[in-house]
Amino acid sequence: RCDSIKNLAMTLLSDASAQKTSSQALMPALIALLLTAFVMRGPVTGVGPVAAEVVAAYGTTWSLYGLLAALPVAAFGLCSFLAPALQARLGLCGAASAALALLLLGTALRFIANLAAFAGGMFLLGAGIALLNVLMPVVIKTRWPRRIGMLMGVYTGMIGLSGAVGGLTAAPLFAWGGSLSWPFGFWTAGALLALMVWLLLMQCRTQGQSSESRCSAPKPAEDKERPLGLLRRTLRAPLAWILTGVMGLQSTLIYTAAAWMPSYWRSQGMSFETTGIWIFVFLFSGLPASVMTAKFFKVCPSDRTAGAVLSLLYVLGLAGWLAGGAWLLPASVAAGAAQGAMLSAAFLLMASHTKGSQAMLAVSTLSQGIGYLAAGAGPFIFGRLLQATGGWTAPFVSFTAVIMLWGLCVRLADTHQTVD
Image (cartoon, rainbow, N blue to C red; front, side, top):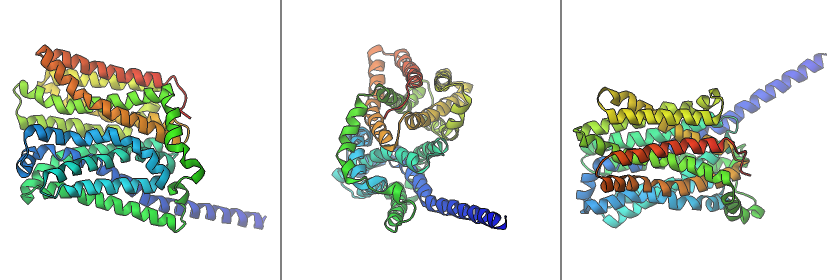
C-alpha cells in the first residue's frame, strides 16, 4: 500500500512538472502571437492620418497617393495564396518568421526618401501581413487546440487594437518627432521585436525542446501535395466557399465603413476631426467583442442564431449612424461590436469546420486571398452607386444587403460538417 501511494505521488509530481514545462515552452509562442497580431494592421492604418505629409515628403499627387495606399490591401489578397507553399517549405515557425521579415523590410523601406522605395515598402509590408493573415490562425489551432476560441478572440482583438493604435498615434508621433520616421519607425521597431521572438522559437526547435513537433517543417513526402493538391480539393468543397463568404463579407463591411462613413458624416455637417473620433470608437468597440465572441457563440442555441444576432446588431448600428445626433455613440459601439465579433466568428468557423491544421491552412488561404480581393471592391461599388444615384440611399441599402448576406453565409456554414 505504501508503494502504491508513493507511485501515485511520483506520478502526480511528474504530471505537474510536465504541465509546468509545457506552459513555459508555450509562453514564448504566446508572446510571439500577441506581438505579431499587434503589427498586422498599424503599419497600414498609420498612413492615412499623415497623408498630407506623405504627399509632401515624396513629391507625389493625391491620385497617386490613393494608389499607394491601396497597395497593402491588394497584397492582402494576392500574396495570401503563397502561404501554403511557404509553410510547406519552412514549417509554421519558419514561415511566420519569413513573413515578419518581409513586413520588417517593407516598413524599413519607407525610411528612404524615394517614391519607388515607399511604394515597394507598402507592397512588401502588405505581403508580409497577407502571409501572417493566413498562417496565424493555423498557429493557434496547432499550438492551442483546447483554447482556440479564447485565443482567436485575443488574436483578433489585438489586430483591431493594432489598427486603432496606428490611426490614433500617427499624427501625434509625427508632430512630436517632426518627420515621418517617427510614426513609420514605431511599427518597424514592433516588427523587429516580434521577429526576434519568432527566431527564439526557431532556436528552441533546433535545441529539441517540446515545441519541435509544432514548429517543424513538413515531411518531404508531404511537400508536393500540401500547397497544390490540398488547395485544389478545398476549391471543390462548397463549405470552403461559404467560409470565404463569411471572411470576405466582413472585410468588405469594415473597409467600406471606414472609407465612406466619414464622408457621409461630413456631408451632414460634421467636422473632419469629429468623424475621426467616431471611426475610432467604432474600431475600438470591436476589441472586447472579439475576445468575447467564443463565449457568445456558446451561449447561443446555434451558430446561425449567433450570426443572425450579429447581423441585426450591425443593422441597428447603421441605422443609428444615419440618424446621427445622440444615436452616434450607441450606434458606433453596436456596429463596432458586431464588426469585431464578425472577424472572430470567421476564424472560429474556419477552425471548427476544418479537420486538421492543413485543411485549416487551405481554407484560410482561400477565404483570405479571395475574401480580401473581393473586399477591395466594396468601397468602389459604394462610390459607384453614390455617383450613379446622386444620393446615399442606394449605397446604404447595398451595405445593409452585405450585412444580411454575411448572416446567411453563417447560417449555411452551420448546415455543413467539415472540410477535410
